[in-house]
Image (cartoon, rainbow, N blue to C red; front, side):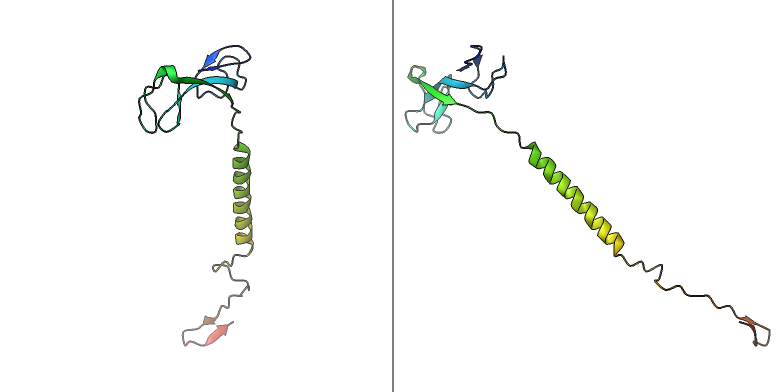
Length: 125
């Protein structure tokens, strides 16, 4: 268990901030060290989480440990999302700007009408 140095609240070993006051937990905590492999285990563990050696609760140690909260990396996610959106917009703009529409040719062509009589002579162009 970790004891908060600000409000003296007992917190779980894996807590990074105090459950009561919300401040980062710094200071000492009780741990169990495996005599076989040296793995640090939480106080109250019956066996080592790595080698499964039985642990004695009387072999606890007081360790000074400073735990700093993890930094929030949401900023990089937002930057990546914005960059992705801008690249989609750029490719869409360039794609429509340089697209060749096969249904509408670049040159405008005039229609020619010819009228014929019953002998198939051209009456009018």
